[in-house]
Length: 129
Image (cartoon, helix red, strand yellow):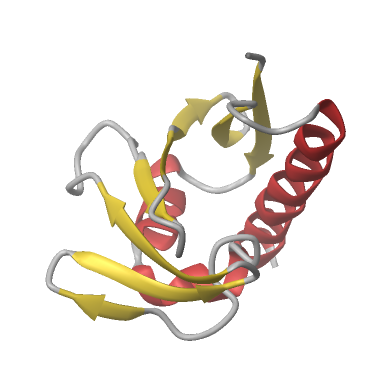
């Protein structure tokens, strides 16, 4: 199993990047691989329409450390843990997503990495706008 750390540097303060990325209503604006329509709340869980159907998303509680880890449960019941961090960087903030290969082929991992990187770039564009 391979892991890849995908990142983007955003020229904004880390707290601002974290606050934007942590807001569920903003997911559809930057995380197209996760949410392609409005996000609905069911208690502490978010439900979003995704490219694979409705997914359930459970983020860690807001914290002072920039941690945005979240579990995504797909329609087939498979839950994947997704490490996501907003780190201080000399030029602002660095957002790092850890992608794990798990049960996908190398080609599927490459595709998924491209989708995640595109989401991170979209987040940068929104915040640096």
